[in-house]
Length: 502
Picture 1 (spheres, one colour):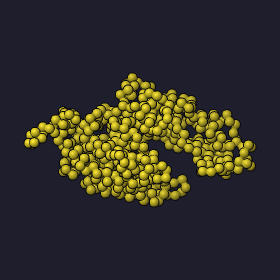
Picture 2 (cartoon, rainbow, N blue to C red):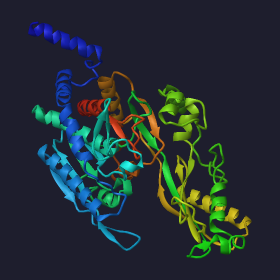
Picture 3 (cartoon, rainbow, N blue to C red):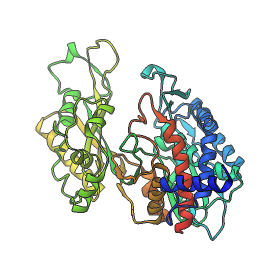
Picture 4 (cartoon, helix red, strand yellow):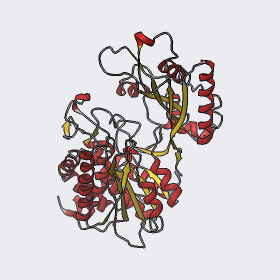
């Protein structure tokens, strides 16, 4: 085949895939980048394997694991330097634990590639810490050995968030390896304490607002999942979270149930009654006034739910759940995204080991949280919760003491989907995946989105790569090889689209 015929064939293939139109990036360059990523995908998987092997658990306050976190951040900093980025590993200081112990906070990486004033500057946020994982908790493979089975890459952190961080780096490395100019200026902010509440991050963002972030035009976060196994999505909102503790105390010491059972107001019985008063069996929150400030449902929003590609039955099966509280796609999505929910998480101080121990706990602490939605007011919710529990407790005429505290309060986040980067991301998704994305919200809370939006006041977008069944935080967490590699191509296409729109 001669060169002209070959070029024509490439043009026709790109045309068919929607990659060559007035609104798409330069097709030839993108084709080269895609080809490079395909050819080097095994190397990209190997790097992910090396990163997953680092037990960067930020939850357990153990010196050994902190050392692993420091090692993880050093690996990432080195990777970025080898790409040609200028890297600053900012000292995170130290963390004071409730038991008086002090542990060092891993550094936060600030890195940048390019400072051409004619190009847009896109800042990528990611985190490299993970939730705890042990083989004996039900993992089919060693959680810190990335294992590929049927195209699925199993390992702790594979989808949350080491895979997406590396996908962005893979996209950058493709341009660098081919000695092509990056279409945009790129900045990175990568932390190692997200799972533990992003300790020290907000302070750093505020401090760097007029320095590192002064030239940033757009912020991209890739730290959540699609609503589907195969169809990509763009996330345009998240719920907030108010986390509560309710303590019921008779005394600090436990009691023997044979000696004291029947003559006490038992703290555990009080606590169970309190927790049982919060939500009914249909998921409806029983706290008076809690729904008063929820944003009304609009016709435009209703249309958005109809357009989303979700099979409720498949979603239920993939979640390994016998039955959801709601049957229709629209009801499921609305109760995940636009209505508050209340979840009971656990009881501290109760006997939970195997075996039979006839103990009456002297002091117990119940833990629950409410996922907040626009336009709920956090301080109003706190008051409503406290008043409700005080009322329920007073009806029991218990001699015990009860204390309710809001341990954590995080606002919901809503994006402006008319921003240039949402348009660029939609085009990039159409180019790489051949389909329009689902426009979704996330039922969980990603505090950094609000921090960026409020502090540096720049456009924030969530561009997820992982499939709905990736199981972040759970046993057998994975990312599909397809999502990881196509996600790397998506980020490359996004760079080119952003350059065009700027």
